[in-house]
Image (cartoon, rainbow, N blue to C red):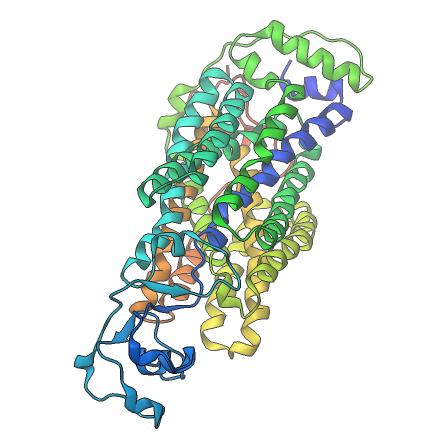
Amino acid sequence: MKFEDLLLEIDGFGKFQILILFILCLPRMNLPMHFLLHNFLAATPSHHCAIPHQEAFVNLTTEEVLLISIPREPDGTFKSCEMFSQPQFHLLLNSSLQPENNSIIQECQHGWVYDHSQFTSTISTQWDLVCEQRGLNQATATFFFIGVTMGAVVFGYLSDRFGRKAMLLLALVCAVIFGMLSAASVSYSMLAITRTLTGVALSGVSLIVLPLGMEWVDVEHRTFSGILTSMFWSIGNMLLAAIAYLVREWRWLLVAVTGPCLLSIVCLWWVPESARWLIANGKVKRAHRHLLRCARMNGRKDFAVSPENYTYITLFRTPVLRKISLCSGTLWFGVAFSYYGMSMNLTGFGLNMYLSQFVFGFIEIPAKMIMYVLVNRVGRRQSQAWALILTGLCIGANIVIPRRFSTYIKIEGRGRGSTHLFLAVLCTTTVPYVSRQNGMGYSSFMARLGGALAPLVFLLDEVWRSLPEVTYCGVAVCCGLVAFLLPETLHVRLPEVSSILPSTWSLLREAGDIPLRRP
């Protein structure tokens, strides 16, 4: 008896599954609080060079001291990274005059003064990550996603080797430890290391939590379950805006977004190990115990479980699976690259950054509800491909349309961008990986690589102001086209150790990679 048949006997979407999904939604809701935390953790407030006190300044106002000490931008604002080598007192008589001799302009010599009206402190103000050090500020997000990339490889293997639940618990405990150490950082180097390790731990949470829930759900309700858990990501987005608005000091902000992991650790007690994994690894008695618990909670009868011992290691060397793996990895890279490219540019939307974060989270909910309807009508492959292509076109449209209209296009692009995150998961969990967590680990690795590179692309605006948008647009559209090469997975059973998708089996047979007879 295949596992999907067992799920039908015990009710594949009853009280048991609903309880598990809602418990697993707690860590899912916590993930965007860390993944998008860079917007607030590393925010750079308005700043200018610190001006040493002089006796000549005694009778001058603060504005007058700035006028004679700091050069101005063409729009009249004071420059952030330059100062006059000597006070220009003649500017008090005519402030419109600007020095023609650039030799009297130098870089900041005495540090910076920051505007604390919006943020009490951020890592930018803590370690002066501005001007020449601006790259280090952006690199903080890259370090985090490098950790997430490494975690995808590590936890993909470990969860297949030692089980989903045990590794999810380990990941949550590590996330708490390294999250708190990040808040206690005494140097930028310590922060970079601890945020990288936090990324490793949270990658395990991200990688395991969705498949663990999906493996208990039947085919009919799998898309709905994916939408449900994805909604909690959007709720986490909105909660991040509220938490960041209330907590303006970066250390306490880290504590605030890490604390919910403790609640997830406690609630994990009621989540069973994946019965699929237990059966695949010969732990039939434990699997039967969990399945019996599920059946009783759902009001169904007892049943029998028997393991099957087929293996398909050689299928990883086939051209068809190689094509699926390459396309899936490319898709995940494009999804994460475009999503985090939009998510980490809150100041570019013409709104208050807290409001932008909340709107981003809110707009994802109706977008995912609409996508749920489309997925069931036109399929996952078409929905995934067009969602990513239209996201790229929305990003590209902002280059040519007037700024007063661009905010609406950006919000539209963000809404579409959020939908292809959960679609990528749905497409990948049902492609024929014999070891599903290793497959998810590979795909997640590619996604986190895209997430790590996304914040660095903002630095390209020094070459050409619109180059970041052009890059995000091009990658999204190209990766969206690649999605058309993936097989359709709507209403397809999750492949097990004992089975493989009939459509894929036919493809492999036609390619001459396996015998004509199925085992």
